[in-house]
Image (tube, rainbow, N blue to C red; front, side, top):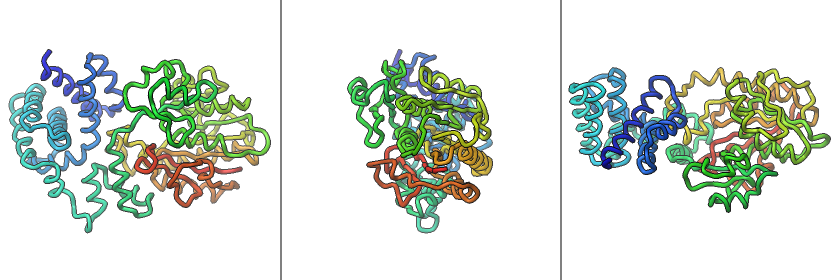
Length: 449
């Protein structure tokens, strides 16, 4: 098989993933690995397919803005499979600096196969026009001036919807340089982090066995340079699991905060898919405690059960807003609330275009209900951690302020329970960031009932 043929296979995999994302809301990071395995794509071409798929999905907004200048009609009216080819070629030409003749030729051939000769001619004309400028040239033309519209400028430059740029700006207190750094960090693929499960393997041993590096902040974190983490026996046998270091930090903060009185009953109110429940389960086991892991979605609840197998953890399929525990009896409660996921855009390339501001009201209602239920479940003197994988103020400080206004709880300074982690702001909450900490943008607030 020639290099051109294998590259063509990789490109078709990328196109099929983009089509599934566009047509049925598939998740690229879940679908791509299975397609690569199913079609027997080798390592080098799998790397190319991954870069092409995730890069095109991630930078779609900016590529589309350029394509709009090259198409004489509304981009939404372009046939879906042909549009996928234009996006793939546009990403190759603008961001990978693939020679125009190669990217155009591949896109035209695929457009012909999917839409006939006329579609191929259309793709050729559009991409020839796109190739008249490089990325910087197009950005100079399509991005509004920074001094007049900084949000719009950064949105185009970094391929994020304007509402997300505005949300980052609010979360970062108006620091536009920080916003630009955060957006740029979203466009760098996230590294794989492992969590060494306490009581099952020491972190030093996990470092030695994987060749990774000890994470700078979490005492359980190992950062890998790349590759499939499933290749390690420690992951396959449940001595370690894949988990962003930021997620480890917020779970560990809840477990490490001092507590007077009993410390035996722990609760996770939105446990799916089970990473934090697994870490908390190991930590609870070391103290002779037990964790109840509540997850409403049956499929995710099954994932939790698999993640915590062999631990003193009881997985329960139930509504976290009405947890199956007696009120006022739990020592430590985690609320890892469903959210927009804006803190993990490095890992979910298409999510920035899928989420909308209209999603937030329903999410914040659920977040408030879960935090209220957690505080009610905690015993007097018990601890509650409210966590989201989002920096959006409505989902973070906004939820905390509203719930505190109508409940009897004291907010603790969460910074004290992330020792050694820099750049945590004025508190009492903590907001982690990819560009500052190399983690997902996790938010943490701690409370004492």
